[in-house]
Length: 256
Image 1 (cartoon, helix red, strand yellow):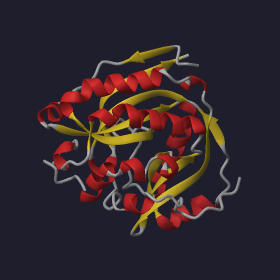
Image 2 (cartoon, rainbow, N blue to C red; image 1 turned 90 degrees about the vertical axis):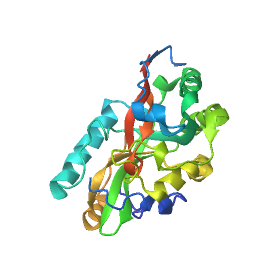
Image 3 (cartoon, rainbow, N blue to C red; image 1 turned 45 degrees about the horizontal axis):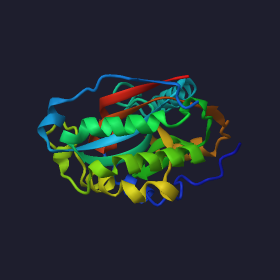
């Protein structure tokens, strides 16, 4: 299928996400296995924490994302590799919550995950896209916003709402530079994730890496072979610089 879309997705949240890229060279689920929470010392000492509730894709998506990442790194070595701090995922909900309520948030998210037949889902990846910033772009594989995803996102929004905090500072994020590596636009983006990046504005995708815009334009002009995949798990992460899912706090593995 030939991609005739422009480099932007037409999503209302994209202009805001561009700001985060600067410097980014860098069945009901029949069994839901929950890993023990990982509470970072940093998370514990701050009263508010920025979290990303996400889906972990199966090996089909991981393979496609990894292949695309390797391709981009060949032409742009200063980009990032998909690894422990840049693992392929689909962000479903980003929120500020009270750190003291994390266990309640984990329980609420777990209840939502257990209410859905997530292992039966077949999600469709149908094109590449990128977010431009200067001469480079942050690329990803776009996923159709299926009803299943939209329903799950709304359930997560509702479940986390009682614990949500409207605003926060850089201290809410995972930082290795005492907050200096946390972008002001990122702080605002998380505060406005609902509704500006949810519902009709939701752009489900898996980030694959960084390259020059000239190269990404050529990549987007190539035929894209659509494929389907399924979620293999879910997690809650502590958000870090440029909105990366930086530190795992709790994870769930879906069992058919």
